[in-house]
Image 1 (cartoon, rainbow, N blue to C red):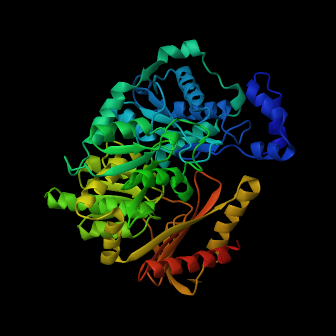
Image 2 (cartoon, helix red, strand yellow; image 1 turned 90 degrees about the horizontal axis):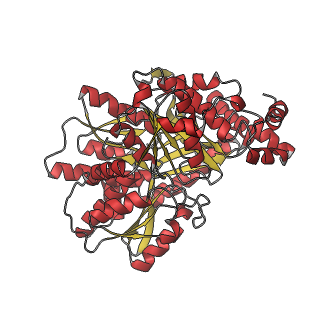
Image 3 (cartoon, helix red, strand yellow; image 1 turned 30 degrees about the horizontal axis):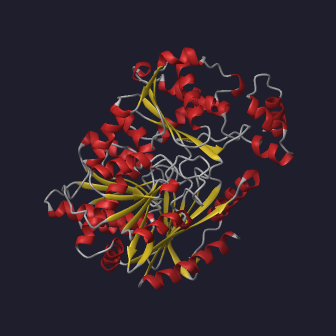
Length: 564
């Protein structure tokens, strides 16, 4: 793809959007190359990228191209024009405009749309697809990415992001579009006949489902304080409404409640980064809060900080999920309501601790590839066969779902669970960290961490590819002096134990995983949403200090192996 030719095609376009035209006219050569050296990738669940002019950017033209592909896919489904598509959007720059552009493209193909009257969290979009019995859904969001990004995610009729089999059909239709600058789009007036605006009815139905999750109804909340931040995103109204109605003392970080696309009052909107909690922890110290919760901008991920021994302790996604599991399963068991065929889902890069908690209660665990669509697809399968009963699903990246009326990560559900568990254990004289430490005593001490190497642009993409290829061609036999006893390559669907090859029954993905002699494991995968190569560490030690020391050694060893 010749970036100079593509750039010239765009700047010469007589109908070019005026704002994009101005950006094009001021681009330096390096900017031109990055904006046009490739097309913004439409993966099997949608696309995410930097906003701006260019084929490698998100703008009205690349959004239209994506919608042509999705529209053609929707038309392959029965009664899809009348069933229609629900469209949601978050607080980011261009989100509302992209939602309207999506509706106009679908209207051009005769497809009815339902658009939320204002911003809503991603899990409510998933719920709305099911509630309105639509053929699919679209969510305009870049989740926890920086303010320069936006994105486009597509959903099936169950509210689940499209699994690869169906997502590839959309990709194929998208790739058929040769000229994104001349896509036929109906006028605003013509689109009106196909658009229905939705709001309070769906909100109330969703709130009702979330509130019904309670495992300990009427729990005493009188001395429990929850500090909450939506990080300038979509979860502000849903979370405060649900927990307020249930009687929780929820204390908002008011400076982070406005839906600001520039995230003015947060260092980062990503709950995976410790600095995103600064203002929330400051508020907790001011009011003596028990638990701090922050949602990412589109309200599908939740980060948790628990007060423990006078300090505020940040819990990882793996740690908080293990505590949620302990609370859910122990409460169900105490009530005699734990199904004999219960199943929990997590992914190949989540800690082993959650699996050990589930197994302790006799709950089966099934692992999927990274991506909540795989968990949603598992729920769909057993919903039909009734062979197993879903009990919980989560990823290490701070996302979980408790009840299957949503088929994506749901931070609104998770906030309720964190609050309920926090209040319940406080009555027992325990913090959430105490519960985690109890789990370590029972199952072993785990330390989970990540290295995320940012590699932007064409050279960055090449470097990420090189790292993965080198690991495949020269697999490590030991890491930090500890023997690799087995490895798994999800691209070839093989597990290697010495000279033995074992077939893996799981979808293919560019992921490598190394199992170490001490019970730890390390995995490598390119991010599907950011220009990063990620390394996941699940390290087991004799105690917290030992696990931390070993983790430091493994981090250093991996960077040496890959030459960083």
